[in-house]
Image 1 (cartoon, helix red, strand yellow):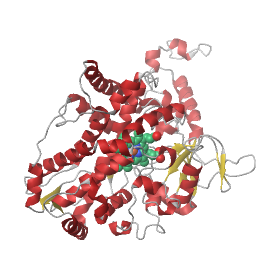
Image 2 (tube, rainbow, N blue to C red):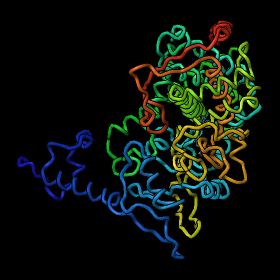
Image 3 (spheres, protein in one colour):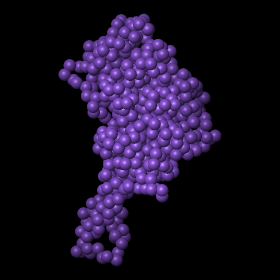
Image 4 (cartoon, rainbow, N blue to C red):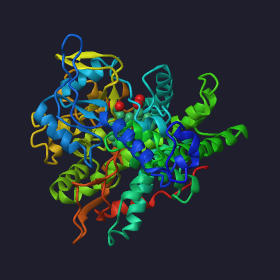
Length: 542
Ligand code: HEM
């Protein structure tokens, strides 16, 4: 052993302590063992690189066409290569990510046929190592396989997110828009100082979700638990890109102690402890006989036994609301505020509509939505031009399937190419131009639009499609309406001289938000100050 060589008949595992094996590369291992390990590792990686596999089913149907190479991951902004491939290969194409087949839907009819008409087969979720297996442990609705447990959890979520329940949050959302605009205005020192709106939009969306989930709100982010919840949300967005994690597609990487794996495991346990503590606060109040307003956690605690919910189930259903419902909604508001300074003519048109229909004494309410088609059109156009999830949340096939002569094997990842759908020149004239006029005459909300017989006429695909379509869209649309229509009613927006805003780049690997920016917001008239002064900030019971 003094030569550093290891006798060939002794298994490596018995002579190298496991604590040492965990460190790799291991300086003290003999050169040939290290070489052996390296060669084995490279061999294990081989199936994940190289050329695409052209599978055919027993009847000779090929998989949809696609690029020649396999990819261990797609770099930042994966929508770009996917868009190029959509142009090259047509309505349905495939791409190999390591050893995993992805099929990408680039056309509204194909998306409807597969995700809606054949939803029974295309509503699964693939076992992404980072997001679905490690961080969410197959829960939180979005990571749940398509089965009875998912149905049960989705039913519970819908009981607090359906249109009737959403009416119950109307006052709360109304109040939160008030606080959102008031803090923006104060920070801007009555329009004299530029503001970065991101944290205000984030707090608005977070407070709305805290109300829905916990029946509470936060005065600021100074509550350590809420602070932590926000940090975890950002970490989640950073770790769960559907294309960007090599560890998702190259299985051998999942067996070694990488930083990515460590962060995912850590996030899982942090999620449980932070949200567990927040649920326990509500439980303690209920146990003490206090009045707790109707909310998700109350429903979960009351139905825990009858629905056979484990503690992890409960925590992750709640986490679904904050990971699904905060950055997505605040992201749309951030995109709106980032782009609107560049469009004075759109602002002028919206201001004219608001002054004509609503006047300057009061600001728009939920009931005014149908009377303000141009403001509605602006929101739809932001959702089209800046959808937070360019690739939706991928679905997965449950069984082998043949569609239009193409073979889609069981366990294929099914991707809705929202970026391609939203830039389809046949559906949207000049798709790269921000033009709310294209939605004038469309009076349907996103949920109604998603059920149109002709999918080509659907407003946009920002909320996904099929049985997994976003369950929060009614609440999200209400939040967006009140925030954006009131922002337009209250302020004029302009760029800060010397600080151009870039819309081409963005943050977040799973959900997109603009890069940090500042804008000037100027109150349009005295009515704004009167309304903003009407209500004081209150803290609900923590
Ligand atoms: C503008 C805001 C929002 C956008 C753009 C958005 C978008 C999406 C998308 C694209 C999906 C995937 C759909 C699919 O698999 O086909 C999704 C799923 C989901 N969303 Fe939203 N969402 C938003 C707001 C919300 C809100 C407010 C909630 C509140 C609870 C929420 C909760 C969820 C949940 C739990 C899922 C997983 C559903 C499942 O897998 O069954 N989202 N959302």
